[in-house]
Image (cartoon, rainbow, N blue to C red; front, side):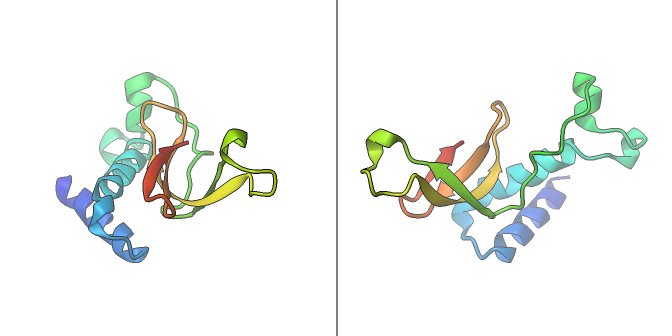
Length: 112
């Protein structure tokens, strides 16, 4: 299983030309996707469903390293500044309802 995650991580990072500094997100994202996908070993049931008793919603899924826009608070911008910053989606947040977003301008990860 670890080998599968590492192969997926390597493929995802090389596909979007990201450096190794994003290896954690590159492993967490396939792990998250496996846990909400059907498995033949579980008779085509979803691991998340077996654990919680509920089927997960798939409407929140996004493409790895896809454009995402983060709202800039009013107190952090002037009247003519944009209300949003262009960032990049890099994964899902496990415990919260949201996404991990990388801001290339500030070089920080934002949990949105």
